[in-house]
Length: 329
Image 1 (cartoon, rainbow, N blue to C red):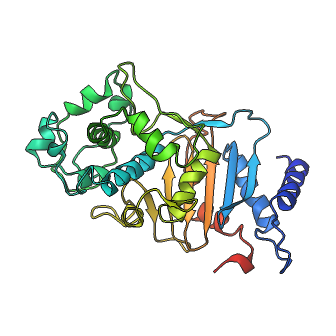
Image 2 (cartoon, one colour; image 1 turned 45 degrees about the horizontal axis):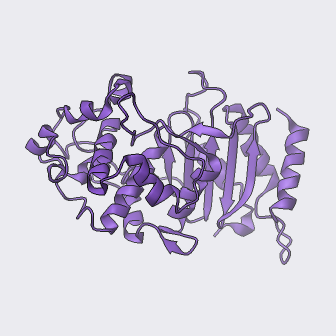
Image 3 (tube, rainbow, N blue to C red; image 1 turned 180 degrees about the horizontal axis):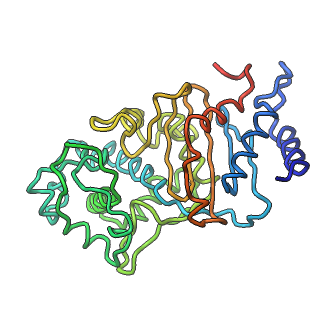
């Protein structure tokens, strides 16, 4: 721990970010609770955390031992894939989530035979089990691999988190856009949100990953949080429809804790939804508090440090408690 350095950094943030409200003289965030959050995140190997309240950065702490500002997106990018899909539906390039996948990917024979829909893929209920490191992650030609997959169960039977489902969505996005996937993301999401430091990854065959593997910064990821917080608007422009954002954070049929590629928490005191990755990256939006929390981890990626058992109700409450009582609804 570095209590003196952290106290000084916190003091600077209070001054530079205008956290002392002139009229009420009440801080937006509680310094004592913020210190508890920083200490906890430091102990769980976080390299950087950020809090935004009412669209403004009120805290940005960085571990002094980690120089890099970048992080791998890991599965956090799945949620971004969902947003790009929504934009294409808004633009009528895809008619509906109820469309059969075969309409766009007839080359995926199993999807055609079993009547898999886009909604099945985006809600992780297509019948593809999680394959982990043995699945698409390990393949030199990801697209060829997913197009040859057979289902493990019938569609719409149960929730099964699957990288493969999202890569199939990526193929649909490429097909209807007639552009490489990374170009579509740049044109529809990264450029409109000013995410200049974000890049997607490719396999050795040149296929772009829709489910993970890219790089970004906490500042870039925060823009997606702001987009969601504002129901699809960004700096006065509607990037994705409010209807799609609402659908994305509505519990799916087979999993009350999952929407359209966003994790949902409707059981905690302060409801929230999140885009997360297995390297400890996260963007958590607390709509009722108008609070967004982001976490980055990339300097210590040892197996022990990547255990996310610490993430639970107590951690979420710790984030929510950073707001001073006068700034809670």
